[in-house]
Amino acid sequence: MAIISIGFNPAIDRVLECPDFHVGGHQHAHQIARLAAGKAANVSRALAQIGVDSIATGFVGADELQFFHEQLLGCGPGRILCHFVEVTGKTRENISILDSKRRLETHLRDRGFAVSQEEIALLDKKIQHDLRAGDVAIFSGSLCEGISPQYFGTLLDKCAAAGAKLVVDTNGPAITEAAKRKLWLIKPNLQELSELVGKEIPNAASAVRDAAATLLDRVEIILVSRGAAGTVLITRQGAWVGRMTTKDAPLRTVGCGDHLTAGFVAELSQKRDLSTALRSGMALATARALSASMEEIDTKIMEAAMQNVAIEPM
Image (cartoon, rainbow, N blue to C red; front, side):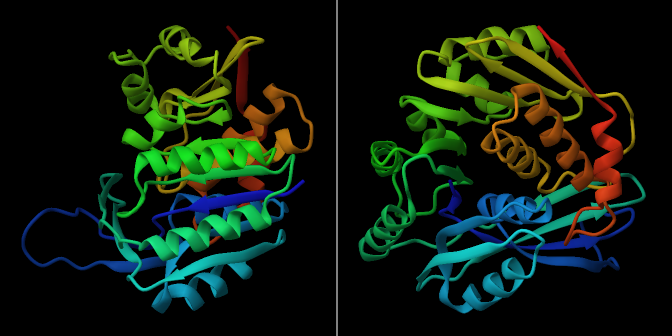
């Protein structure tokens, strides 16, 4: 069984530290990371850092292809096989500004490239070639220009017909289209879940559980991230809430949701139970939030976090 991460709209993430950042004027900042990213690439990087192999595919601009290969191939200890489709457009470059003095983050997001019908057909062919029955296909991140929600739904149908387990972490019309289908796992945040069910949901575990339960006729597992409030896991067998028992202030939130997905899916792919998977996902996300380096997680922080995740049935 393979895990395949699929990203339509990758990014190069520049992360700058600027104490007491404010709008206007001239300020001193220093770059602490420049990463081959986008949610799908983040998932594969997180998997590699906990020793799990994956295939990373999707679109990448021709000028940035080598950068993505070099960065992802060097993650380890798990291996990432890069099967990207090279496109003529330029990969977007996002900027995250971390204000270490006030512990605030500012994220500047570019729109990204547009893809042609020929490039779409090539990615479709590549996914169908790589995918085998029983594999996990993780569709993560936003759609780029040229990919319609309807086409995204059609691609999900093709992967399901091939026997893949579908994981979706996207937003807007794409997640709405995905939720019409039978999925193994969907991972919305609170706002995205509100959009899916058509009403505002308060950030209370019981309210999240009740709202998400309306999706269980099509989706096997729903993993709802709630920021500092923790995570709610809803299945047809029951629901659980996960919280960190410590109150360590995060250094950043960039990529934490992708690490949650990676840790959770990695455990389930090894036939672990749901509560163990939730614990591992939350510990990996916590390690991302608290690790000093942006390139890798501190395994000691993850080990400590494993002991500080409280999982309670609802």
